[in-house]
Image (tube, helix red, strand yellow):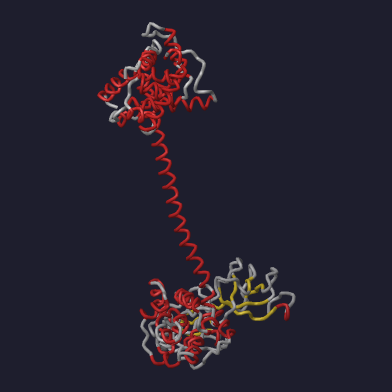
Length: 374
Length: 162
């Protein structure tokens, strides 16, 4: 402690004077305050930026989610679009095959179908349930439920029937209804496909109401579905109870007055309006005996005569003109409208889109190349 | 910062700035750098005064901050810590100016770690714990460094010791 060497060093060090003008604390004080403020400002700015970025990201995610939903909806609709086309015949065919081959006993043993159990077995979500239930009454909504069912069923894909019929079964019979019965026995995946048909077979009276059959909705292509069904080769069974419901005006011969009882399922007039027209009425064409010059090949020159067929009111089959059919559109049990049965359509506005049903009388190029009237 | 805190910091500053500058001058061998380092350390202490004022040895914290700042500044400048600069001409309490001058030169010949221990422990009479806290090392390290630094300093000032 009292080492002279240490004392000498201590005294030498303590004798070391600092600068004469020692700065006051204000310099350090102001410096420290300034840095503190700058640091806080930087933190605040960084926090605000982070919030803005995070908020922007959330908004983007939210908007993205909404977009995704819309995209999904669009995609599902597009996927469903073919369904109605191919659907018509399928309900009849697919169920029969399944029931006959694999699940005959089971399918026949359970006539009453539980919608809830069916949807649960198929793994469908509540939306699908609603869609399936709605499908019983509305053919236009049927594709949705069918789509869901087939999607659920296809992955399992144990049943050859399901795999063979890629086209979803649509409308007339509610999808969920049939699902429960055959499924548990064989393969849960088969359910969706088999279900509708079983339900259709056992619930023949659940045919779509007349309103749906009238086909006013241009978005529901029913005629194509019948064509596809015929091409599927799925052994269409003519004895299926709902066959009657499937037969539409397309099957009827044009020119034949056909009337259906008010209670019976109404044949649907081919509704091709809103699609590319078969013929275009020549601009400025003057009706001659009810016929208008029309252009069939789109070259701008009239090459045929077309008769416009418009719906008119009628109360009995006797009032139906050739190529027309008396139908009950409002479902009150009484015939009140005669609708054309012809599938050909004409465009009177010049936009190429069919806006009226018409009948092409004959080709001018064959009988009158000069384009003169008949 | 409230006025009371400002006055508290002002008291701390007035009480420690001279000692801090002196120890830094002895440790760094550069009075101007020591002044800058002391001011920097005090400014940082002001920044965190809410926390620093509750430390057991705020001056030790300031010394450590100042030494780190000076060291980093040295590194940035790629200069050596020990310079040939003569300390600011000051007044020596000891009448033997020549002896004090030799002691200071011998002190600068030590490494920065040994010099810091000698300055804090011997010149400023800090305890081992305070010195350890200020240097950021263990108390045992302070003791060993102090012993080696003192031995080396004695060797440098052999004839004076004799």
